[in-house]
Image (cartoon, rainbow, N blue to C red; front, side):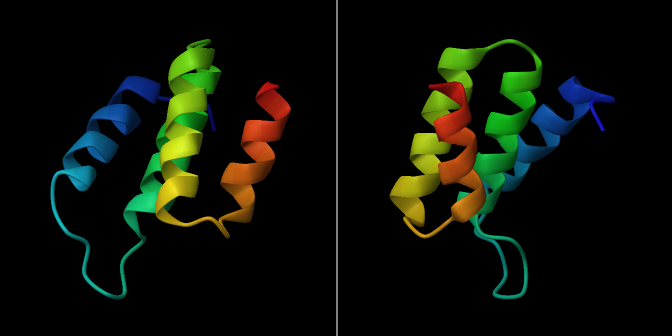
Length: 72
């Protein structure tokens, strides 16, 4: 929604510090969402790095691939 971006960034950083349970989102999905936050903040280089990290973890993550293409 573009609201409370800093709070979302902090929550995702905490999430990435632990291993998710099998039914929880993957670290790849968390990296993709973190990239989305950083892109909204205008931090394009950091967003790019997060999308690439997401794709390194899950090459089939369509949303991260599409977001990376939009940054180019």
